[in-house]
Length: 161
Image (tube, rainbow, N blue to C red):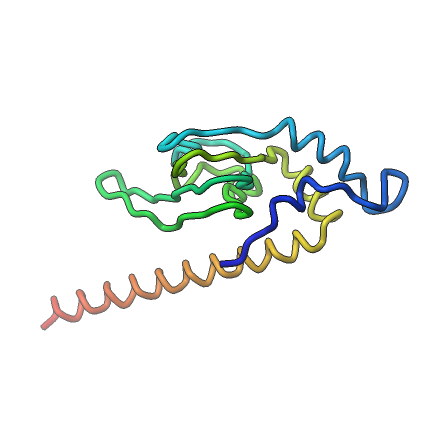
């Protein structure tokens, strides 16, 4: 699994505030103020809620689950350096999944799409890694959908026999 190095979010920019590329020192202070801690089994995100916030795991692990109301399935377990919640931040849509802390978890968050865009522009390595991760997630989702379509076709064929 690809990971974004969380420490990179909080490290200083050697170019400084007066140079192009921004000042990560200011970003560092801002991110330090946006750190949350969760205990074991504490819900970080509840599916269906409307919240524009992307999280970056600084310490610990989280479980990502989907539910249809009667069945819940874990679709991923993420750890230090991983991120989640980006879809709702970019699209302003309700959360599609729930996220629960597995043990003690510490996360930083970004809650304004403009801040994320500015951060990505100043940190192209982070942006490139984020694109790789999102592409991998999309490919995995495609596999699941293709599998479901095949399953539905088999059921239809069996019914028609």
